[in-house]
Each structure stands twice: as C-alpha cells, then as structure tokens.
Image 1 (spheres, rainbow, N blue to C red):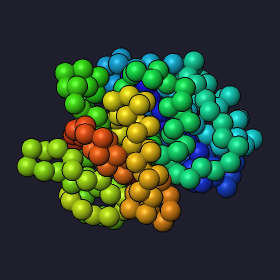
Image 2 (image 1 turned 135 degrees about the vertical axis):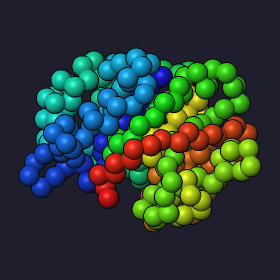
Image 3 (image 1 turned 90 degrees about the horizontal axis):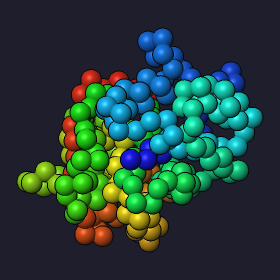
Image 4 (image 1 turned 60 degrees about the vertical axis):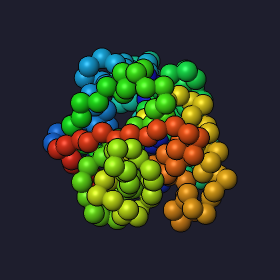
Length: 230
C-alpha cells in the first residue's frame, strides 16, 4: 500500500515559522503521533518509503522536509507544489503520481488521531469490486465530511461539511489503486457544482466517483478520536 499525505493546505505553516505537523500533542509531534498510530504502520504493512508527502514549495516547508520529516520518514518521497491547488483532492493527486499505479492508495490528512484495526490490503485482495474504504466515527457536527450507508453497510453517498448521516469521516481514505483515484477525480471535475464545497475539491466526495464507476465503497469504524481542529 502507498500512503499519500497532503500537507499543502493554507493552515500548514504557523505564524512562528513552525508547521502544524510539528505541533506537540501530549509531547509528541502531531504528524508522527497520527501516522505512527495507524494500524498499517503498527503492523508493518507500510514503512517510510511507502509514504509520499505533498507540500507547498516554501522555505518553511523545505526546512521541514529536509529536517524533521527526513528524520521521521527516511526514504519517503516528497512533492513540492509551486502554487496552491484547487483543493486536497488535487494536492493528493500530485502524490499519487509517484505511487505504484497498481497498489492500493491511502490518502491520510493526518490531522485526526484515532485507533483502528483495519487491514486495507486484505480487504482489497479478497473483494475485487471494492473500490474504496472510508474510516468513520459518530458525529453530527458540520465541520466534518459524512458518509451515508445503505442497509448492507455500503457507502451510497459522500458529502463535505454536510451532515447526511451519523458517520463522520476520520480524514483517512483508501482507494483500490491510482486508476480508481483518477476516475473519481475526473467524476468530481465533471460534476463540480455538486462535488465541491465553496469551490474546493475535498477528498471525501471522491467516493461518489468511485461509486459512479460501479465499485463498492465500504466503511470501517474507528475509536478514541482526538481532532486537533476541534
């Protein structure tokens, strides 16, 4: 599995010259506390070279990538963007471009801490119609994206900042491979008005494109939520 971490958002750099990734949560940097706590890291399904980090090309981001990030994830790939993109879905696409096209892709926004026991590689291996997996937790706050499920627990709709169910997204998204991600992104562009929030392309609504392509999207519940945005 490949893991793409988009860090090119406008809130990444802080006024004191540090980054959101370095913000200490219980004495540990947010980025490592998030990514090292994921089950795929804990169980060895991914290692540092499986990661691709997407950043804006600024002095602060370069300093961070060459210093702390290189220490935490030696051998990881980096993409530096000269300008802001149309949203995280497009920033993540820059990282997907460096991934193994046939491998499952995890897009991790890395700003929500949680506990999970997901085996994403195994889930894709046993179900050829599985196109995506969303991690969810109970909420009714409109600051999150949401997934609506049918009676068989399949995701039938994804929405950004709109409470369409009790299943909020934990900010980590799995796609079967780069091709499925590309098709989902194309769907979002073709349906811009319904698939963006305030004109911005977020990752969660891409699952609507996965469904439109005929794939199943499933969800897996996580626990022990700590959202630094809240």
